[in-house]
Length: 255
Ligand SMILES: C[S@@+](CC[C@H](N)C(=O)[O-])C[C@H]1O[C@@H](n2cnc3c(N)ncnc32)[C@H](O)[C@@H]1O
Image (cartoon, rainbow, N blue to C red):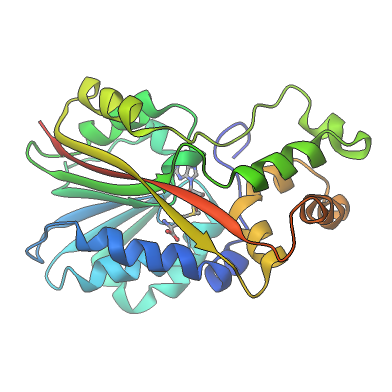
């Protein structure tokens, strides 16, 4: 999707994103469900977390929306057994428009990839019934600071700089106070946002970092330069490599 959301290496993400799945289990526990609702999974990725959501909805449905066609294709194959109760759509959440409003919105590890939270929250609110809960977690203020610094330094190297010139960093790590304000302005109440630190020490730190955190950067480089870019990022991280995540939790209700 030129100019919109990036394409991801969906197979690698699905194999490596165990921490994201663990965090999603905790986030899902906050979502009040009777089991018959229709729930939007905003940024459903490869479907690993969508499956957990479907397990909470024995008589319900999930609409999974994601900006990466590769992720949607991967989710379709991973969710084959649930096909009757899940609808998967490739699309930008900033342009989200559903035919019928949903009973709840869930999102994991996605909102920080979206530059405009005002528009995002407005689109989500427009897709929800009044009283519907929004429960989400994404990268927040201070997230993976060392990793982001290494990416910035690698992007400025002469061999890569042209690919990133004039391109803003693709992360939007917002804090709780600003997010609460934006949610209120978009038509939510019962709002609570807070930060939470998570340390990840993956067994395959290079592959994990590339699959979970570098998709928009790698998309800007020709295929044959991508490994060298990942190497340049990894060289700049303290060893052993650990990713210091700061997650932004969001609970709100459509007013
Ligand atoms: C780290 S993955 C998380 C996937 C899944 N929710 C999980 O927890 O495993 C982030 C996802 O957000 C999607 N994404 C990023 N920007 C988006 C946008 N503007 N609209 C829709 N999806 C977007 C990406 O394509 C990617 O699949």
